[in-house]
Image (tube, rainbow, N blue to C red; front, side):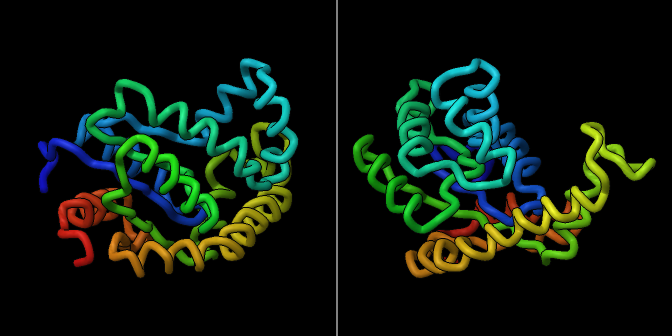
Length: 205
């Protein structure tokens, strides 16, 4: 498979601070496929002040997972769009094994299935450090006024949620022969190269 591959239904997953969203954008550009970012979708709902946006805003602020019913409805609507006929790069969903089952059901309705799952993994200390340095914290405060300790606490909580849900999800995709793993602790360029190689590898390799 190369960047000229005609169709690709791919899930990109990883813990907070893994850089998966950056890699998702690069993959979408290389394969000329729509990037479906759940973070972006939810942000748009919140900005528009929709019923869904109002429902999830508080939970997102706390770092909590969005209810499966809400998320699956948004995903179904998006995957059924015309621009997804050749495939998609899905970033941020599924986050649990239950959501993976819902995604399988959504795709089955559309006569499709997941073809590859790329896991970009990083140790917690590296992920937390990346997250806490992602804003302007030279003065010890982020742009929204939160202290570095606040940021570390929030990043650590996000990792706790990942640890609670990811192992079962990762194992389920590994058992299905869909999982391709990449070391996300490398430089961005090396991670990008590794991701492209992983996506081009045979399923189950």
